[in-house]
Amino acid sequence: MNAGSATTPKLGVQAATKVYYTASGDLLALDRCSLDVHANEIVSIVGPSGCGKTTLLWSMSGLHRLTSGGVRLDGKEISGPHPDIGIVFQEANLLPWRNLDANIHFPFEIKGEKPDRAWIAHLINRVGLDGFGGKFPRELSGGMQQRAAIVRALALKPSVLLMDEPFGALDSFTREEMNRLVEEIWLDTKTTIVFITHSIEEAIFLSDRVVVLSARPGRVAKEYRVPFARPRSLEIMATKEVFDLTNKIKMDIVGERSRPKAPDRPTAEIVRIRP
Amino acid sequence: MSGGDAIPEFSKAKAGDGHDVSLTNLSAFASGPGIRSGKEVAAILIVAVIIIGGIELALRLFQVPLYIMPPPSSIAYALFDEFPLIAPHLGYTLVELISGFAIGAVIGLVLAAVITQFPFAEKIVAPYILLLVTTPMLALVPLLILRFGFGYTPRIIAVALAAGPMVMINAATGFRRVDSAKIALARSYGASTLQIFWKIRAPMALPMILVGLMIGAIFGLLTAVGAEMVGGGFGLGNRLTTYSSMIQMPQFFAVVLILSTLGILIYVLFFLIGKKWASWEA
Image 1: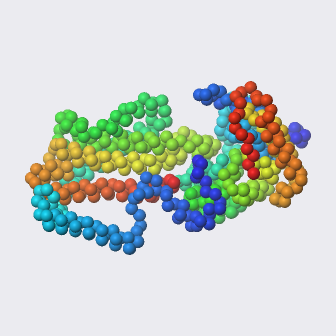
Image 2: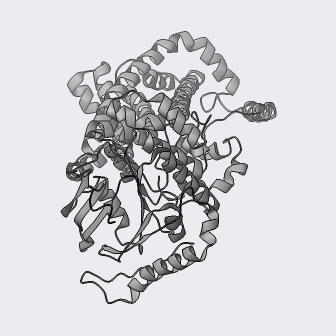
Image 3: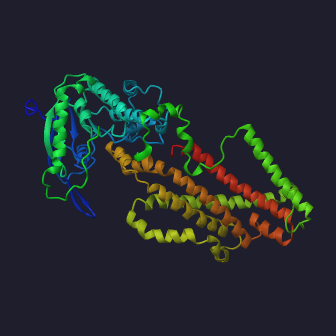
């Protein structure tokens, strides 16, 4: 953090506040939430369900308008979707009527650009999808669909990759595989990554920093540095350091429940921590 | 993609070459014809022969009069014998059906696409669309004949009025299937409203559009034949009234057979289009 204060953050969120005006009343999802993500950093965001993680990520991507506050990319305020920000959505969000190649070419079609075939071929090879270009999403497993979605998100060479609980629907083995893949891609491209997850283990394994959001309205409650060198192996997950860190974060999240509630309406959901 | 669409990794072994997973992806067309083995074809043919032969035998055995129910063999004979006389009428009916359907379908599709973009306008228009869907357009044919005479015009208008609302109501259901994640995906690349329509909304609506086109075409056929029966001296519907008034029942049933075949062809056409363009739908 002390290194970061000197330079402009890659992606900065300043006092982001988001109110959803719904028929059943106004809902304060984010309350003056501030977060800086530095270049080449992997930051995970965890927090109790319904705490505004996805709202925060969608605001960072420019897909959501904030009620107040701002998002800056390389120091410049952004007001809408930005070509330098790639998004990997919950589940794969592939277009089921297009085969993988056509799905990966989709961003270029929208932009009216020629696809960068060499780069795409490299990415496809990187995620192990060689020879699957003609397959339709329904013919592939969830893990493979998400690999294709990662290729699609990286196809335009964004400098920031926002990942919204990308592996939440996958089984734990596939999830570990995908986590290693994300690290490999990061080692390859050094893309700045913001990663939202329910899984504390996933957050620790992947991140340089884990940010814990408070229960709704979401604010940054705690931040932890994860000091392990890369590439990381799954063995680090068995160390006492990781065990202690996991428990600390778990207590931060679960502890939220016993605390007296913020002025908006009480959260009834049970905070669940996925294994 | 929503909820249950994700296939977990461990099912990969079972899914094999992907054919298992694609068994149920023809949506509304799932109950249609498929590729069958030689044995199945033989069984289907044998059953058909037994049923048609049985009817033939029963009609002859009980000496059912020709004007009540002609035996299949005489219908087949009438079909071949009279076909040169019936063929021009088939042509007239096809002209009415195709032009009326084309007009109705285009208007229906455009209205569905526009109206679903404006939810408030949709609420205002919805009751009238429902009225158009539920009113049998045949009821308007005498009025249309009064205004436009006994030519093609009243029939084409009636077919368009029957097909259009059917296409529209189904297409609108398709266009209303908003998947906010897919629209967000397109928007994240800076897609315009028009791009979102052509690249997300339209393909998503396509399976429902095809269902609407198929139902619209069948309703169009019903209305074309009905309108021909009301007035004007040509068309397959007119043949039906002519043959029945002359008690030429084999010829009458030959025309019915042609109409059934037309209906089946409409179904098969849209089934094949659906198989080619909408097979992604699970």
